Amino acid sequence: MKILLVHDWGQAAKQYLFLTKEPRYHISLYEFPGFGACPVKYTNKILYGFAVDLRECLCEHRFDMIVACGMGCNVLMRAVQGLQRPSKLVLVNPTLGGVPKLRAKLLAVSLLQLRSVRRDLDRKYDLSTENSNVEVLINSLHELAFDTWKQVMLPKGTKVYRGECDEFIDRLSVGDEVIPGMGHSALQYIRDIIMKEVFLWECSTDYQQS
Image (cartoon, rainbow, N blue to C red; front, side):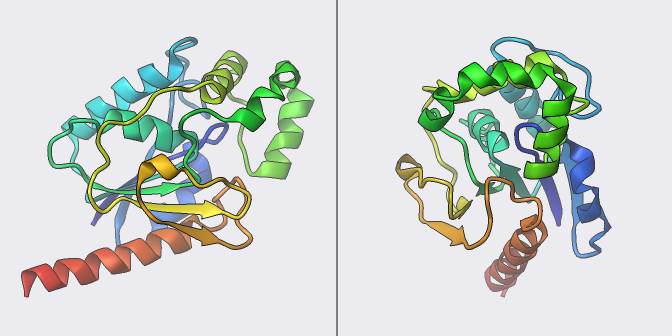
């Protein structure tokens, strides 16, 4: 089974390397430009640029399942619109349609220019911002806060997981599963989520083939 994992805002692909050791599936890690070790490509219209790149990747490579977290869900939903033969989508703490709570804190976002602030954020929220591009970090947060993009198509079978502190996005029109204890970062829970979805996928595949 081939799985693509798309990370959240402020994270890096290297944080999910532990998932690649699982023998039951083959997982590829996708990293956005300006985050982690990936060179900067966009400093404005960032979400749109990310979606264009991800769509190209999905057109070139076939995955049975795509698991995305936070901002990655936003980019993924843009990328799959109208895509033929969409993969099974698993959205974890999706950030879609703007973040009103974040808008009130945007004045403090400029503090991300301080490496010490980014270091503290990394320790507290399982992020990897210290070595990410500051301009990409700040501008992408602004775009997420005021995002007004709305998806046209939601692939059949899309599954949504969220932590207790994350709000339900009713316009996704799918049921969500709340994971007690999971905050804004799903890093500590992502393996269990993937293992569950792999099991369900295998059961469904066996049923369809029988």
